[in-house]
Image 1 (spheres, rainbow, N blue to C red):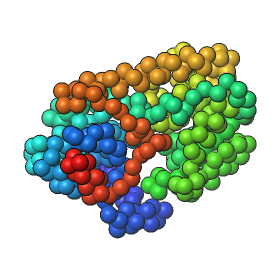
Image 2: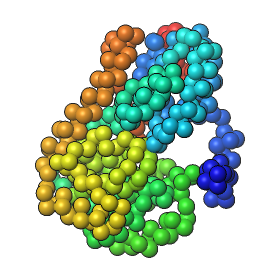
Image 3: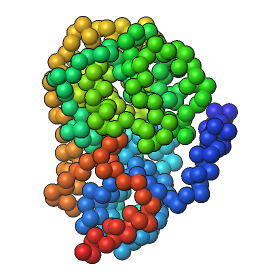
Length: 341
């Protein structure tokens, strides 16, 4: 009961109130990418507040593909599904498909009468942005690319002597006290990028360059989504140390190049040293990763082939690339105009 209350009040706590008020006063905007204009196929990074888009395209065929950046729990499915069913009841010429990062989530949605397939959103990261640089000099034993939020558990990296960090902040998860603890525990680390605003975040080119200067990538959260950084490490040929987790990043992991360790700084450090000693081939890591990504992409193509025989997955609804952020009205107008041209 207390935890549920804290969760409901969290957006209104002092550290988050400004972010919350800003989001409430702005027009509904959404991360989205257009896969097709006729019929309209849109991939969205959020399920809520899409009634406007349904209304804008009420007379047209519309297929919405939803991806999830966080772990989807059974209670989330139960909460989301009635809203989806109601929207489809109001708009019978529309279709909603949940792209699930984990296979069990598919069955949960289908049990609620909602279309779902196993298509991990990390398959949509552009592998041409993240590649192996054979000429790169390895400067760091490990790199951790993660937001400065407690769920990322940076302190588990405290025992790694040669450590590089890429950090950024989200209004809903950043905590000043946590950041203070991280800076104290990881004072020895090299902060490659420490972004305080969106326009200060590392570019795809920067992330790839820093990954290639590192020997191992770190994934230390216990619960989140598929974690874009995890696939970026692999595409750059880095082996990975991960803690046990839910959310979907394990889908692209294999024991040949991934060490799964306990939630303990000593275990994390030992995992890093084990991978450095084993030195799995970067080309093998990347090749296997791209193969797995293509399996998920093809599953989506097959799922929609009756309506879109030649679906091309654009680059990408992920962290880098032509990801749009626009109001739902503007997105609807764009789709409507494209269908009439």
